[in-house]
Amino acid sequence: MATRTRQIRRTRERVVTALAGLLVDIPYESITLAQIADAAGVARPSIYRLFSGKDDILAAYFAAIFTKFEADVAARQTAGLSAEEAEEWTYQALFRAMAAHRDELLNFARRETRALLIDGVWRYQERLISYASESDVVGGGDDEGRVLMPLLSQDARIVYESAGGAAVVTEWILQGMRIPPDEMASILMSAQQAFRSQAAYLPEVLAEHLRRERQGSGSGEP
Image (cartoon, rainbow, N blue to C red; front, top):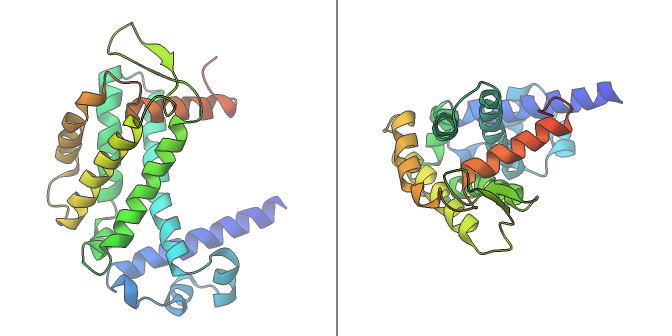
């Protein structure tokens, strides 16, 4: 069973990687499942067993980018950074993860495909919102006065903050990703400062989720 699971995972990764490679030179709407299968070195029936269609592969592609972003943030959580350094790194890791896929993502900086880009970015914001609703997350101030507070049960601030971040990331891509990733990180971090004193602050939401995941895997802090 474990071997079969690994095979499925590898095949999924090959298909997603194949799509990413094709995006560099071919408009997304012109890419066919046959081309993806050929580039991945798999039979088309294998794709149909794993994905419902091309848009499903694209969703997995975006998910992989944001999963890598989360892995980068998680790796820094145990590096002894200050709260301010960890916050700054979260924003930097986000834009660096996107910049690593610049050649593919610019495929969506067109009128024909921008809706797919918006959907791909917003799917991750939905993931963040789900993290916020998992349980109480530390928040409520910049100093020692922080308390545990329920998030989504209070108001829509987490959604408002998420939408703003998604809009900035999307617009950066639509404008050709010309601003360097770390500069974009500073821009978004500055724009989101109004939320730092709120319970619904996304870097803290993500950090708490990753801590819980680490603890759940048995490698977290006691």
